[in-house]
Length: 244
Image (cartoon, rainbow, N blue to C red; front, side, top):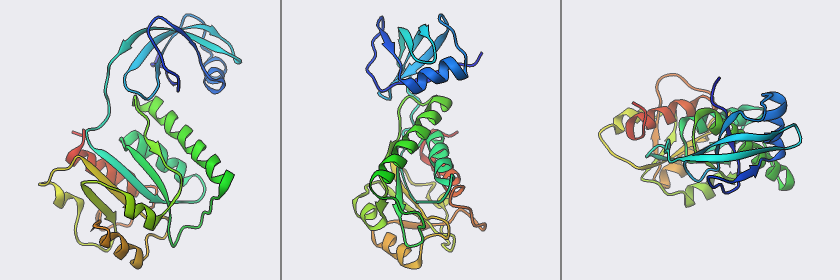
C-alpha cells in the first residue's frame, strides 16, 4: 500500500496523540477507508515528517499516535518566486498544483492588462484559501515537507517593485535569449514572471525590464499560460536546483 501523507497545521511531538481536522478526518476515514492501527505520515510544513498510527478513525474525528520523527529535507536549494497572471476556470488550480510539485517557494497571482479575472474582498480571500488547499494536496502527493507561500492577488507593478531575487526573468516568446544561455551562471533564487491568457502587453514587458527582469523565450512554440510555468520551472531546477 502506498504511503499516506497528511498535512496538519499543528505542532507535533513524538509520543503525543493529536486530532486531525475535519477535512483530513473525512478523507482518511471515508475516502481512503483507513482503520485504527494503520500508519500514516504527518507533516506540518516546518520541515521533516512524523510516522503516526491511527487511534480513532471515523468520518467525524481521526486521532493519531505520533511515534518517530524523520528529519528529511526534500526542498530545492533554488528559491523560486512565481508571479503569474490570473487565469479563468481551473487553470490557476492547475498552475498552483504543478508549480508546487515542481518545487516553487512562493506563488503570486497577478492582475495584468489582459487579466479577465477580478477578485475582491471575501471572494479573493476565499480563492486564496482554496489555492492553499490545492498546494497542500500537492505537497502531500509529491512528498514535500514545506508548503509554498501563496500570496493574495497583486497588481503587476507592485509585484515588480517589491520582489527580490538573484535572477529576475520574464517569459516573452518574441525574445531571442533563452534560459539555457544562463547555464554558465549561478543563482540561489529566481523570480519568474509569466502572463495570463493573451500574454503580457508590450508595455508590461518594458515595465518588467525596467525592474531588471531579463526577457527570455522557451523556444519557437507559444505555450499556454498553464503550461509555461511547468516548463520554465523545470529548466530552472535543472540549471540551479535539484533536477538531475
